[in-house]
Length: 102
Image (cartoon, rainbow, N blue to C red; front, side, top):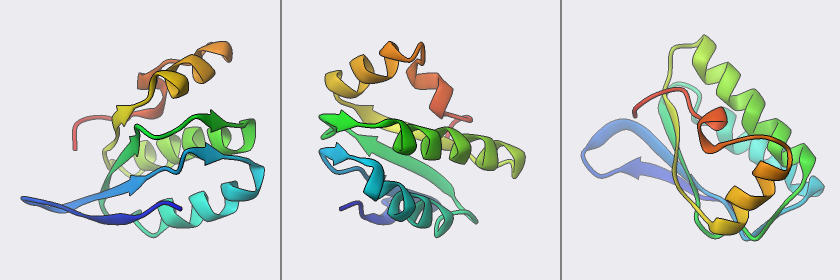
C-alpha cells in the first residue's frame, strides 16, 4: 500500500511510496492517492516496485499530465531496476513520468 507524507524541509511536497506489485486492482487506489496530493508537488518512490501493469502505468502517465497542466512538480524520487525495465518494454523512460523539480 502506498503512503504519503510531507518531505522534511518541504512544506508543499508529498511522497507516495509505491508497493512492490502494482496490479490493475491498485490503479483506482493509486489515482485517489495522487489526487489527494494535487494541491502540492509530488514525489513518487518506486524503489520497491517489482511488478506493474498497464492500468497503473496509465494512472502515472495521466498524473504527470495533470500535474503539468496545473503547474505542479511530479518526480520519481527513486525507481527499482525492475520498474525501469518494465516501463522500457513500453518504450517509456523515467522522465516520461516527471514534470520538473519538486
